[in-house]
Length: 96
Image 1 (tube, rainbow, N blue to C red):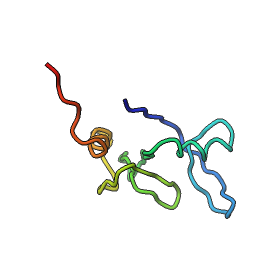
Image 2: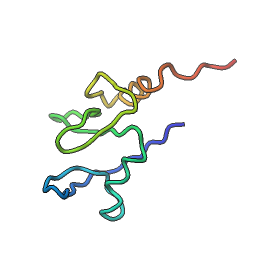
Image 3: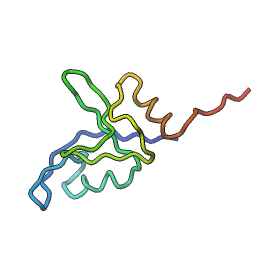
């Protein structure tokens, strides 16, 4: 079973004076804690009018995957299927 949580991001000020994006949650204290409960944390991003799936962290957001994936972005149309294939390998075998 795969559990997918979809959330909007919110900019939060960090103690060192920088800003980062965290999932929007109920209250400011919960948002930074949400990612620690999931081994894979990816982002949908609009790059030049084209939506993509971002897999690599940048200055604004810390992302994570349980297994190293060589691609930095994936297309929205097939991205989740590629992502799960990379993490889990071949899909489940068909039963007769």
